[in-house]
View (spheres, one colour):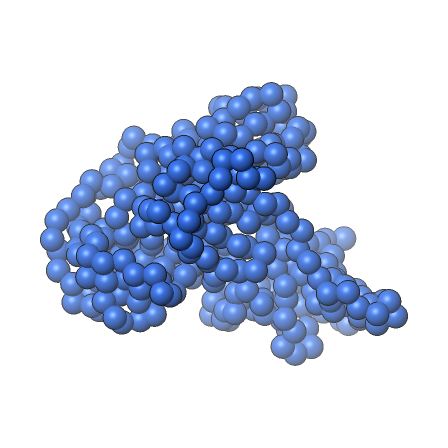
Amino acid sequence: LQYRNGASPVILVKVNGKGPYRFMFDTGSPGIAKLDSRLFNELKLVVTDSIMAGDGSGTGTRVLPITTIDRIDIGSYIILHTDAMVRNYNTKPGLDSIDGVIGMDFFENMTLELNFEKNKFIIRKGQLSAGETGVVASPYIHGVPGIKLSVGNKTFNSIFDTGNMGGLTFLGSEIPREIMAGEPKVTGHAQTVSNTFEIKEVALNTVVSIGSIVFENPVVALNDMLRQSNIGIRFAKQMNITFDRTNELVKLVKYTPRTAVLNAGVRSEVRSALSEYTGQYGDRSVTAGTDGSLYIQRPNGMLLKMVQANKDEFSLEQVKEAAFVFIRNTAGIVSGIRISRDGGANWESVTKNE
């Protein structure tokens, strides 16, 4: 697995024998494959049909062209003769480019594991068993894998949406004010195939349960556009997830990132050397692992390992194009961090919290 801006999973595929190309794996994208318009032109494909596309909100649908792809290779897994919808998937500045999107419909009679712990995309023959530990029903909602989840005493029919770069998302009117730990705050805007809308986040003063897994006081996202509750990638990455599309089952395994065990004296020395970098930078926390590495994490986000390139300069083990430069004040003390998601073309500066 690779990741789009450290979030949505990306796999390398070949299209008609060429590539590899970067396709986002989006469990929230049912039906045919999706192809970026640039790759459509590069491969000299032709329009064979058209389709009405929307985001489930019931507003802003668009007519988009369809082309035909002879062959898609994902490792040794081969998909033959499939249609693909064509549009520009790279309109948002600062977002890693992708060449297309592929969803669950191409993996009938297979199990498909998103192993975030090991950054693996694993396609296997076989099926899950309903009696297996961690396996629960996953009925498909308009072609998208769903699951029941509980927020306090309220139950939701949610969907898995790895294309949603946010966290656990709800229609704002469905979350009672009394279970919010504070006032929702605007954190950004989301864009679908047909709409752009505001996103707010708030911590809950209750638990969220998915199957047998319990999350204490999670931060959730609220919007006023999409009616379907949604397990976005920032939340999903706390679990290894195996889908059985044929039998409509899913296996969830919550994990804690593992670090190497070092000699106690070495461990203490390593943590001391890294301590000047640790702390809170806006909504990001930087911590020192016992393996001699720094880790950065956003609320409900994946714990990402930082790799040192030079003094005060780091990248991410899982997102090679990301770059981090720690800022020092006149006294030589770390006072902030500069962050680039695109190899240094654009930078964001964040002050270290007092």
